[in-house]
Image (cartoon, rainbow, N blue to C red):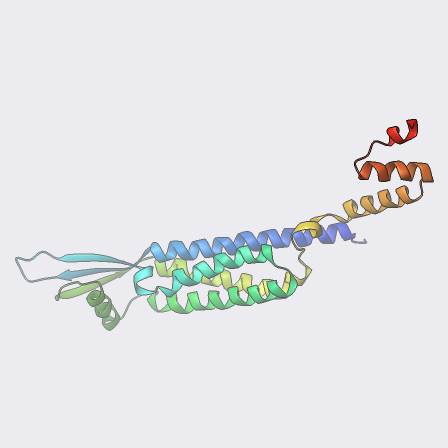
Length: 212
């Protein structure tokens, strides 16, 4: 079965739409991950002092994650504003940003080493004492966001050359063919009819010329 040009164009537009939406979703998910808990710290002090607890977000322990998530979000906008080679470059940027997010979040998955937890406790100003830690879900969300951005960046590099650009290129082939047929029909009209059309294009009243 033959595939029409209209089907190919519609499929390419759908691909672009899905890529833009998913890329924006990956960037938004990365920002959410930066606000989530990555590490819960609890310091037990000598009596009668009470224990002290602190929830540490991703923006504190891995500030690269929300920064790169903003890059991914900007990439989603860039996919709409550019074409071919520009989209290829943006796809590479999204891919690299995804790799960076995954690399920054992976060390915080699962159990965190004592040394790393103590460094964080000092950074957030917790007092000395017996330190216990519990991992949050922020690092996992960040890895998912980074992995999605990585896949979308690679897909953009491989597929973006067939995606349509904004503006006139979004016109369907049927619309373009209709315009071409209308232009051909006007060229084949008698001279008087063509003059009437030209007068209308200039904003003149062709009936006034007829009555004079």
